[in-house]
Every structure is written in structure tokens, then in C-alpha cells.
Amino acid sequence: MNTNAVISEQRRRSDKQFTILCIDDETSNLKVLASIFKDHHNVIASKSAHQGLQKALDLQPDLILLDVLMPEENGFELIVKLKQIPELTHIPVIFITGLHNVEDEELGLTLGACDYIQKPFNYAIVQARVNNHLELIRQRKLLEKCANVDSLTELPNRRKWQSDITKLWQYAEHHRKALVLGIVDIDYFKRYNDLYGHQAGDKYLIAASLRMQSCLRERDYIARHSGDEFVIIIDRFVTSDNLFIVTNRLQEYLAKPYHIGDVTIQGSGSVGVAVYPKDGATSDLLFTNADF
Image: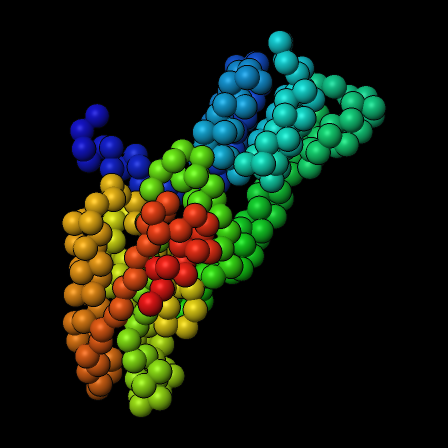
């Protein structure tokens, strides 16, 4: 496949709204489900519970459509596993099965399924009921985004940062990896805010956040911690030289003039850095030692 075709395929996939994982040992059933949803969603097929569990872990789908009657391990057994794994417990599961008795439906719902659809498929009913759950997922994600994103800069907010740093810290501790934490303060921000007004101050913060993002790499992390204070995680091999390069580059980007309406602001920023485990044995201590 040539480069243009690859880009086109990636763009097509990114346009899909949700990822649906279908787990069923019958190929014909998987084809039917794919035909219903593939035009608007990414549909991932799996023919066994074991394979389905692995794909759920790898892909983190938005919704799982799960058959009950499968060889080796059935859907009831699989949903128990799914609900015991922290990364997967939030993913809604809909049973799609040929079992028609009330006891099985009650069991499926008791184990944590959000719906129970019986075979043979009625295309319209399957589509309508799945779409109802996808709409609930969309609304939940929107609420999560509002709760975790700073409304001004659209960066992760303090609440999200506190959740993320806990996970990053645990990962670094478990794998004995260095964790580089940086704190960036916009110098004299209160003075600019008082002098030019809050609207200009907001535009200044937005422009500064965009500059910081542009000089960090995609796998680095940045969040707005408070008014004019930002926190970053630098994801790269730690040496004195490359930390100096990163911090110096941040300061250079922040020190360029900002043209906000009719006003030109000569900005600047202060950057403090701390490295785990050398500069702190806990995330709180690391944060304290990175500040200035």
C-alpha cells in the first residue's frame, strides 16, 4: 500500500465515532454485526473469549458485543473477568445470544451486562439498541472531558493531572524508570493581567500554552496546574545535558514577544525540574523540589 493510501486509511479510521469489539465464535454472526456498524464505527472481530479479552486490553473499545455460547470459555465467564480488570470494568457489555430463557437474561444482567439482545438478529433492533448505548457513552465522555480539561487552554486540568501523575508515578516506581517533572511559571503574569485586563491575560495564557506544546514532543505531557502555573512530564532519557536543552528551549519559546490585539507583551517563563528518584522519593516531594 502506498503512502497516500495509508494516510487515507488512517484518516478514514479516525473519522469513525466508536470502537465496537464483537466476540462470537460464529463467523457469520461477526459478519452480520460488522455489516450493521462498519460504516460509522470501527468494528473489531474476535472468535474466542481468550482472544476477545486480549483485544479488549489492547484496544480499549468503547463497547463490547458478546456471545454467551462459545467453546472453551462462555460469555458469562468472560464478563466476570472483564468486570474484575480495572482498565476494562467501565466498558459496557451487551450480550447477543441465542439463549431465550428469562433466567439466562437475568444472569447476564446481574453479571454486569447493560443489555441482552436475542438471536436471530433483527437488524433494526440491534442497531437501535446499540446506538442508544453509544449515545450514553458519548455523553459520558463529554462529561469526563468537561471535568478533566481546562476550559481556557484545553489542556488537562489540575484534577486530571493529579489522577495522571499517580499513574505515571506508579509506573516509574514499578519499572524503576526515571520520572522527569517540570513546573513552568509565567513570569509577572499578575502584573500583565492587572495592566491589560483579564481578557488579554487569558489570551496570553492560551498563547503561552500553545508555545509550550509546540516545543514539547508528542509523548511529553503538559497540564495547567493553576492560574499561571503549568506542569510537564518529560518523556525521554534523562541526562543533565538534555534536561538543560528542554528547559532552555521552553524559556526561549516563552520569552518571544506576544502580540495580543494592539498590545505587545514581552513574556518570560521560569522552569523548575526534578527527577525521580534523585530529587524526591514521592510525587509530592518531587513537585516541591521542582518548584522555585
